[in-house]
Each structure stands twice: as structure tokens, then as C-alpha cells.
Length: 346
Image (tube, rainbow, N blue to C red; front, side, top):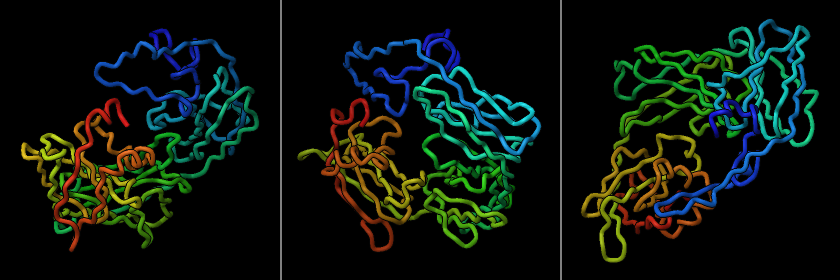
């Protein structure tokens, strides 16, 4: 965007390649060495503007209504309006597209749930945002086998599970592992993340009210503490990567966890082969995985294999399905996926 367009609805409306105003309908553009990108033109055009009208209830002084494009990080959103004395609000000058709304009050101790609004060709009226009390969630973090470990260097994060926006709640435990997460929305779904984890360390169990919520997309329960147990994985996997009769040096090997664990970042394992085409992946948590070897991929592109059936099907013939753990697979061989097949992304 040019320097004179400071916000999404100042001047021209936001435009995505190739000719849409909605990010969800944007066309992906792949880049690779030697690619002529001269055809990737984006044309700015003036467009009709619309309004969102609604009300926040109950009426609380200094209520803020955050409005942001769909896909935004609401933890960092800085654009908001305030309703009038009757709780009514009007957001003007919005171009077509998808937006998210969130109302908060009393320093975040009251919050609405996040609402998605799609603007097509008319004003949106009658929106209702209901403020509810947020809750505090206490919990404990334990490192298995190290009861006296100082755990204050970790962060415990609640990450909203929605793909329509980002929102995080972050806290640091006390040295004994106890912590409290504030301003938690009771009906929201969260993934629970512990960072930073050293190589081989993973979240073994995650419970609230006696229920396992390790797989994510979980609702936390009022008055029920969160119990998190970290552990060190001791499993190893030897991998040899080849193409034809030759070993492949410098290939990136990735392990994608079983479907039930794909929301857990600590279950994704990567490594690079040596000059003999070999790599030993250590600290692998027990479970089922799909293994791939790439001559070259973009950083973080392996996560797309977990969430894109198209990408998974594309490389199915190169994949090896295995189980790691007691009595599981100890060594595998992988045929490398050439760089030409992954240039510019999946």
C-alpha cells in the first residue's frame, strides 16, 4: 500500500490480488527464483462505503468497541469507538469486506464475544453486543521429574481457536509453577500453549475439571484450575533421505503429528540431513506421525501439510506413516521431494 493509505478505510479501500476486497477470496501468489512477477497487478478503486449500527448492553461507562478487518490480531488492535449514553453506536465509512467487532468495559473485566460482520452492498443494522463478566483461571505448571524446578521462565498462553481473528492471553508462572490467567471469556474456545520449550520438552497432559483438553479448541470451566504437565521426550527416530541411488544432504525432514494433535506446536518435529543423507530426530513425543523430506521449503511451510488436504494429497506418495514410542518405528527411509515442486510454497 502507498504511504498515503494509513488505515484500511482512509482513501482507497483495501484491495487484494486479483481484484477482490475480501481476504478470504484473494488469489494466492507464489514466488520463486527467476519468476517474472510483472503480471501481479493490484488496481485500487474507489468504492461505496457503508455503516454498522448497533447497541451494547448493559450500558457501562467508557465501553470500547473494537472494529478490525477479519484476520486481525485483536490483542494489538488500536482502533475503537465508544457508544453514546444509550449504548448505541455507529461505525461509518466501511468498505465491503469482513470485519470483527468486540466490546469491552471496566478494564477488560467485561467483554462481549467476538462478532463477525460481512458487508456486501448495504448498511448493517441491529447489531447487538452483550457484555458479560470475564473470569480468572488459576492453574499450575509442573515439569515431570523436576519438582523443584524454577518455572518462572515459561509463558502460559491462551490463544483463541478461531481462524477469523487472533486473540491471546499471556501470563508467566511463579517459580513454583502457579499462575493466573485474567479476562478469560467463559464461552470462548482456546488452545493452551506453553513457551519457550527447549528441544525435547513437550506438554504431556493438560486438564481442567478432570477433563483432558490437550487437543485444543477447549472451553475453560469457572472455578476449575488448569493443570499442565511438561515432560522430556526420550524417543528417537533415524531417517535416511534419498533420490534414486543417491543420498540427499541438507534435506529438511518433518514429522506431522496425528490429526488429533495437530493444534499442538510442540508435536511438530524437524531436522536436516547430514552429508550422508542421515538425521537422527531426538526428543520425539510418543504418537502417530506422517514423515516427509523436502529438498527445500519455506520456513514454517510444514504446518500447511497439517491443515491443507490439497497439500497433503499432493505429496502422499512421498510420505511415510509411522508410530513413535514403545515398540514403535525406530528408523525410516524417505524419498526427497524436489525443490521444483515446492518453489514459492505449496
